[in-house]
Image 1 (tube, rainbow, N blue to C red):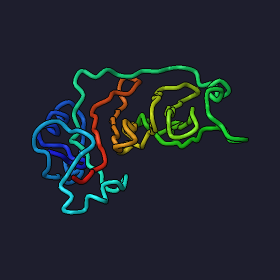
Image 2 (cartoon, helix red, strand yellow; image 1 turned 90 degrees about the horizontal axis):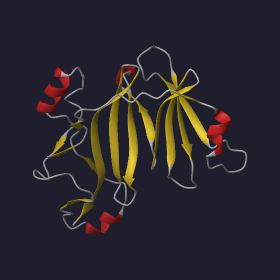
Image 3 (cartoon, one colour; image 1 turned 90 degrees about the vertical axis):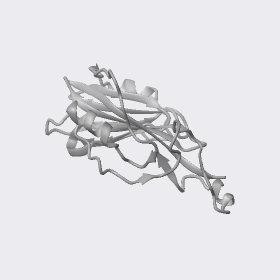
Length: 195
């Protein structure tokens, strides 16, 4: 079963029992690919519009989220030294090579620094990290990585491109736990192509 931002009742109950509050009405179900694993590219009957399958990023589909079993808390505590950090970045002219947003990820009522940076010329690789009190408390490196704000400041979602050609993207949800962040579910998405 392929779904767009949907959590099935069994997964919702398992997550709820573990203390993860996730809305089970997050999206709508698509009744395709009822068997097997989610694969990209994801093909559907084009109803005579196969020529449009070359248009990237028009229609995307996501597989239902899977809870991560036996996940471990990620606990980073490295000093953030801006001059050292900027040495590894790709810059044009006077640009600093990174941008910053601020929002609360650990539910303490204080905003953390959410930093996104490029280390190469185009798209990838990238760095996404969270800085609190001058320390790096989370870092991810990869293709088009991005940290999005979590529901009610309870953690964040990490977005990463897996394959630019198929639009395959991976979303991993993290919640604050024991001074770090625990990954609780993962979901994949990709563009639809017509056959």
